[in-house]
Length: 239
Image 1 (cartoon, one colour):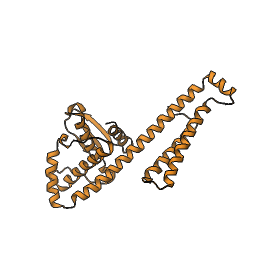
Image 2 (cartoon, helix red, strand yellow):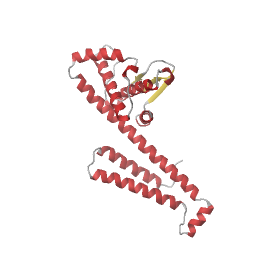
Image 3 (cartoon, one colour):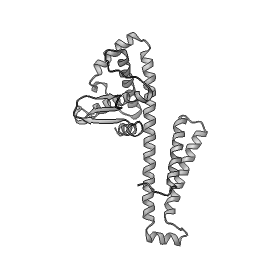
Image 4 (tube, rainbow, N blue to C red):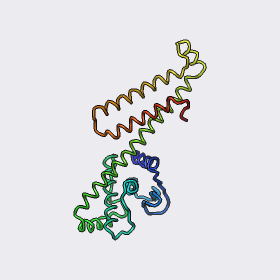
């Protein structure tokens, strides 16, 4: 559940997705507004039902960035295909995030199955096309969540270290630091975090040099670490 919550926050922060809750008993994605609407969680029979439905709608939300066209005409094969992509994406994401997806919880599940059967009769390769697009949607969502979590962890680490620096800058600690050869008690905390950042960046660079899988993700990690390093050494503190 925590991983799905992180995914939601990541898509809001990094894909400008809006997620709205209300008493309206219908879940849907609006491509025009790039918004997912969800009924309030208490309107679902179970927590599993809520998050299963949310994953399905988040699957739809990738259509804008990945260039899938969404039609509101439920009688078309295009509509059935998009529903299949969203459903497969939600299955894949459930497996990646360790969540037990329950298809029976989705209010439209039976209707979807009927539409898929009809569409598959018209296009024998539909399942392969939909699987390919669902795989791209899954990678997109996992990358956004990964970047969001990494940046959040780094930000929290900097905040902790800044707080530690402020505590070390107290008069008593400052006097002790001067006696021990430090011109600024904050140097103690800065030395610790600088070493940690340097080790982290070296590990990422080494994995890139060794051609480990996920090179694009590793490069993003390294760039994020470099940005935070630059931020840490700028003349302001994170609040």
